[in-house]
Length: 425
Image 1 (tube, rainbow, N blue to C red):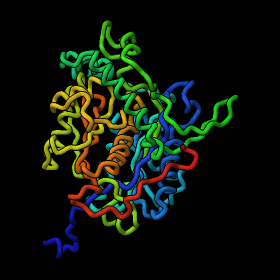
Image 2 (image 1 turned 30 degrees about the vertical axis):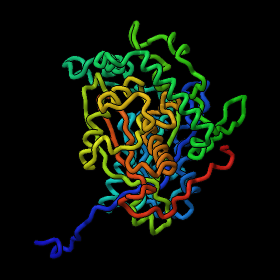
Image 3 (image 1 turned 180 degrees about the horizontal axis):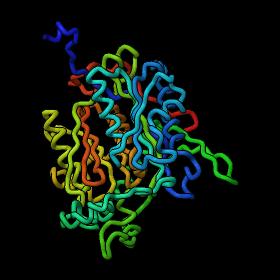
Image 4 (image 1 turned 180 degrees about the vertical axis):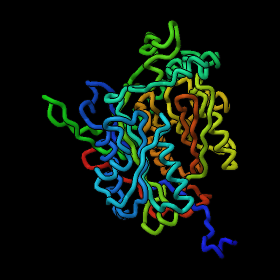
């Protein structure tokens, strides 16, 4: 029986566009951090509400799905987070939601998961994001790894400690010295501070009011982790906690952080219908597995797969947003593709070494920063967001700039840059 005879309709793949993305200011995890005493789900709710405020032409009832990632899905990061966040944000009860875990690539996976649904035609508009409150839920808290991992040597014991995997990556790439990683870390801090001074960070932050006993309420409008003015001398003497006389320190790695992100994705047709801005078009994406004990190399095969899927080469990429879990991980990617440590296409606003890495939330931060760079630089046609993932994986998404003269998708419905939230200056 044919499709027509059975009543089924033929489906066509639809273009998926990134409409908008934002995040909370990132905080340092722990009782002294800005979000000590704040619930994780409240952070992501702030992001969803702000997305609706910034995009008034999007009726809440047109949102077809809410996907929210968290690595430690318990307590205030549990209970099917996408659904509970949708309800808490005041979305209609008809809007469903679900939770995702791919460790550091949680928010990135939330985006690609709903993008697949949009492309297939199951959704027109979806919200995707992630949250990690590492103060409330330290990495690995409550985890119970199967003893077979060790007894049957399925993975190297180092694979269960991310810092150890970074030291292993140094072993594999002896040309990546501690001096190089420290220099990269200083550059990350400097680039972030320059972007902040130039007003490139604040427009995509949603202010968060948090309360601490005895201190009352404070409105947080800036990131807490950056350390502007960090020098090579400052980093040279830091201890190496993962190995005696090692190379990985708190200065050339991302810290332990709290924060949330969220984005709106849509079909290009729905964006045009609703008058939503088109800030990027999704071209392709890929995930790849690698040896868990050197998980930092994961972005390399993931990027190769994503580029192959897109019919592109590394030379076609004009901007790179690479999550800086560890400096050695970024440098191993750059070295593999023959890209200089200080290539101006890479992390123009700095990265996680400066701003922080609240695990499952970071993927959308990369996308939001890439979207803003696309607006600033219409000479760039393609960019990527990529990251390494715990237990030996990599994740990469290829995006197209709608402001480029040769953009192959629908033209932006409204290419105006969003203004900073009230009170976030």
